[in-house]
Image 1: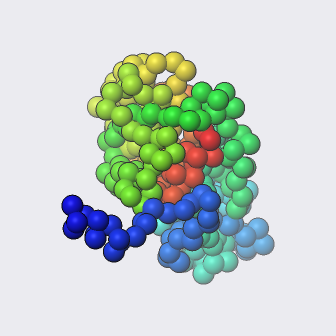
Image 2: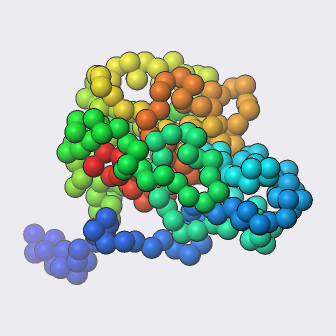
Length: 247
């Protein structure tokens, strides 16, 4: 017992004070991109053609961060003339259309469904569904349970049974083999329920976009309430989205 107390004193308080205090991520982190409207159209078209995700609309000068994997190729190729990635991790939206952006997103708290706040604002239980993903999204979601993030202090937790859940948190491109499992899990959650698409795979198919072996769009199966883009979404992106959508 004395060793436990000594260890606690040596380590100190490790949990982040976010959201009471702002947090800055590492400089190499790629967050919300800005598309520079004054960029040469020919250069924009070249970057759009080189984008492995076809996430850039060179005519409208927009980038689809619901499909983007944040590889940074567009920024590298254009040397920052077309796209620059910021440190902003606040990427969650309540609509798919909002993910087509030139550098700004609507305030999530203002666009969330207010009855969700009254229902789940003090306690939110989610059932995680890994629908054929590579485990990156799942790993970064698990990180939220560590002492640094301590997701449970906000009344948010992941549960084992959909019958104990308020909603589902889906990651992965939803392979054809997982389609039935996603639907049955969704049906098992009591109403009213929340659906969260986390990561570009569940939003648009991600790197598997266009494959006949995946659904690639959770909203085509069931109505999505919250989109959390990224490949994978940074734990802070997920934390911000959950707090501002439900709290």
